[in-house]
Image (cartoon, rainbow, N blue to C red):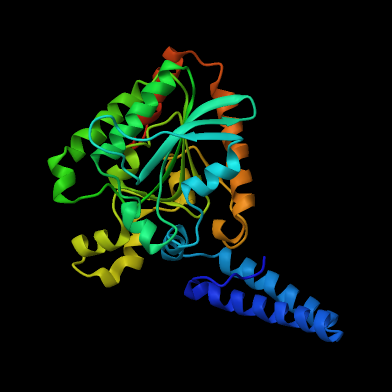
Length: 322
């Protein structure tokens, strides 16, 4: 994929530089009629090798950086590519319409469902409006209202998680942030329709859990899911944010770590270099995963769904003494 004029991470820069060289040579070939085919092929082989070496050996901290990449596709971007129909609904009917959480009725083929997701901004202005994906209590209450509609109309729920955490400001606490998240945890645990949860970027603490209780929990390959950010962990345990790379490793926040620990049920592959490098392919991979898991959950009765959901979460964190 051609490098776009966009933000790049330090470990991406050698790859982007090679891509620029290839595009320059292609431009000279078309404009000047010069033959650089041999050189272009050589650089393309070198590029593939560099991509494989870079992205097959990411450190946990580099994975954190990819999960937070400014160009990583957001919930609404993916929703528009995945769903054949999508109608946004607004407001919690109690206080306001929190733009950090979006949702509504959606359709994939013949499957009608309710979609809910955290939404970060695509620009500084939008990020301020959406509070960088950090929801207030009214956001979680909006999500709960949408879940209630899902149960009422017997539609499965699909949630996309992408947040550093719930907003910790005083106004959020005054309006009952902890209660709103706790109420959602209780409500989702007893919801009588299938729930598929997908962490598409950051899955941070209770902010993620507020829409994160599901029958199936999946993660994009380069997403992260943790009780605290590496920076927060480093500040608390070491009193030094410079230890964030060490904290990222210790927290076991990558998709493979969490799959090994049986916290999640599966991973969804990303294009080489991350979801931001090929948004359409990322959306297709998510669509296939959603379709597969909803099909598997479809024939379960409400009582079976709730029982299996209960066993799934009761089983997390089990250990045996040696």
